[in-house]
Image (cartoon, rainbow over all chains, first blue to last red; front, side, top):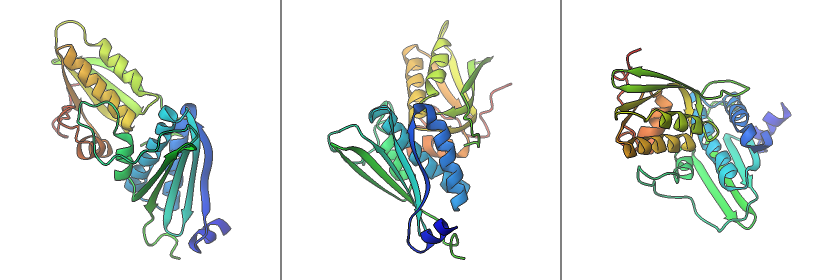
Length: 143
Length: 119
């Protein structure tokens, strides 16, 4: 309860924080969705944000060394998910265009930006950090 | 996406309708499970060219790796001279595959309501 109060007062309430890999991908995704519903997102928005976060997870598993760290937190009316891996990479930006239909790959990070309200990517020698945000409905936490 | 704490392994059942093989897919189509669908699909591409139908009515979640698997399978069909179609997508899969990534035509997604293959 203090956590929820802290989130309403502008603090940060951590909802989920864990290391993940391919073996735990599915369970992690299910736990994320449960937390999103419990935080107040409706089913459609929870599905969208779960989809975005899952893309972050599989990007780390496929391109970031096989594992990473996920943190899901609430601050005020925003839910923020951060996915980090530690494989050094040449800095790059989020794709702004979708590849043509026959292409294999290249859609994941593009889809992230369509499945949440804001996304931010940092990449470089430290690895890759993807931060995704979604707004809660106004009434949640307004008691 | 279904609530299932232990995860849902992907199941692919193969049957036939008058057009060719039908893959009935059940579970979540993600980077861990999509290989099962692609391999099972490719195994059907024998004999005279026909139509491979992938029925996703039992799939509640599909990520970009799952989409890539469908694209791979569609390409394998084309290489073998086969046709390919996707049927029975739920609204969230339809949103990602048709509305967001624009793959509805490439993957020959059938309109809902008209696409139930014969049992």
